[in-house]
Image (cartoon, rainbow, N blue to C red; front, side, top):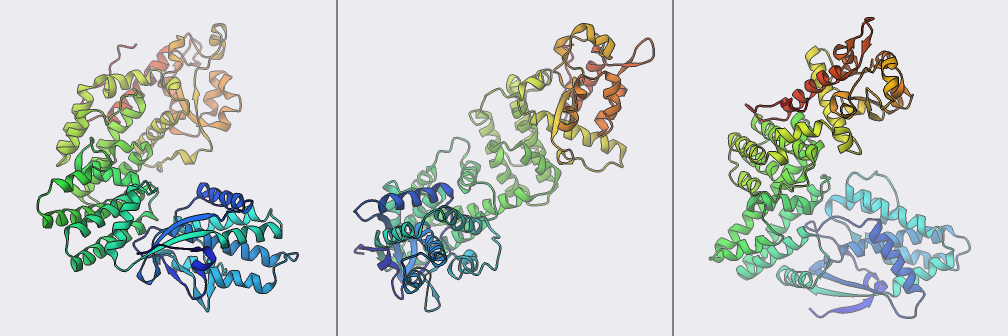
Amino acid sequence: MTPTKQSIKEFFAGKKQYFIPAYQRAYSWEQKQLEQFLEDLKEASKGENNYFFGNVLLEKNNELIDGQQRITTIIIFARVIYVLLKNKNEASFSNEKIEDIKDDFLIHKNKAKLESVAYDRDYFKDFIILDEKKHEPCSPSQKRIKDAREYFTKELEKEDAKELERLLKTMCEAEITSMHFENKKDSVLMFELQNNRGKALSDIEKLKSYLCYQLYTYTQNEEAELKIKEITSVFEEIYRLMNDIKTNEDFILEYFNISLYGYYYKEGDYKEEIKKIGENSEKIKYIEAYVRKLKNAFVIFKDFENLKCENAVNLRYLDLATLYPFVLKAYDLFGKESKDLENAFHLLEIIAFRHKLVKTGTDLINNDKLDHVLKNFKDIKSLEDGLRNICNEHDWNWGKHVVEIALNDIYNIFDDKDMVKYIFERYENKLRKAKTSGYKFSLKDIKDPDIERIAPKIKNEEKLASGYWWYDEKFRDIIGNLLLISKTHNNSSIGNKPFSKKLESYDLLEQQKEIQEFANEDEEGKLKWDTDAIVKRHLHIVEFVLETWSFKDDEFLDDEFF
């Protein structure tokens, strides 16, 4: 286990070939890390001292267990330097020296110098090692590999051949310290020690390291090797799943731990849970079960992100991450494609909608009741009763009364109007469903959806002539006076036109067409938009909102405001 210090060129020279084992994460560097890599290299090229690239940990057969992100980036960088120098006629490098780059860093006697994780191996070999570009990236990590090459190409194309040669020389002479381990136990131990010294790892990498270390600590030699191999194979599956999931893996880990331990879980509490267990054999069983459940959480989240059922789509739109531990628990309780799972999504959407609409600033997580609901969530009834109880006992945070108040000034509450648009999207679908023949409506069906005041902000003397009869200014921003339109519609100055002209233009959506049903007639039989019309429509939409986002048997619709 003696550390070996050598240059990057020596690290890769000759027949040396490196492998990223399947249980390691895929390529994860993005522009921020690439910029730092290139900036450090340029800075080092101006000085006299060699640049230190850091440490790498290797198991037998040259498997990289730490440092794989940097090593992968070096290979990508070498490919770009090779291509650019080969294309620059003024390069002082001979063709033989340029080919040495390929031989040292890319491929030697038909063997790639680096083999990426299994699920990216073909793409990496095609796009970086062989430069054949046969395939388009089909995973986030493959896209990052492509982005890294394109970033280095864009930045290095600006440099002349002399500067490229200087950067290559700096990289070749940069120092790297490697340490080889003969067995997985020792490598896991060192990886854990590196982590404890503040090495920058994701939470899920810290977890993997810690759990493997615990297996090493509480089992005998041969059994430890076997157990660690089993655990790392599960993490291999997790890393594969991560490539197909949009949500950050550390967030999913947090949701998972909250679903197990409750909302007062703090990072690393799983360590305390393991310490509480007396027998070593029980500790091992706990770790194995925990990892299986964690993998299942990633399987669940992949399914949830792609689920087409309406209730799941609605919950994802509101995206209240606080409630995602409930999603994991609901899948565990009810399984996929069950009616109870869809009902759970709807119940969670109710409190998510109220929380987003009311914007009280009160954190749901800091509410003891939510933790109680999660821990006692065993069936649909317990979930519904628990969430209803939160809304009833905390009426000024999430109750129906504050929902009604929010709808009375909704135009001013939301700068981006996204919640208003969402309400009207759902309202439009209700109207279409009532006609039975209407197709499902989405905000994507409108170019640049926008919110318009039906009765505009105009001087009192203009109201009567324009068809906007005496309405109190306080009614201008309530939901009954708002309408979903396209931005192009709004920008056509329709906002300040007489009410009769507006009505003629309201022909795209069902909610636009129904405006005339709420309007009143003046003495000449012409339709007018007045306080009474606004209030009628407002009460109608408030009733829709409370019916849609209320629990069964709730009483609602408080008209004291009027």
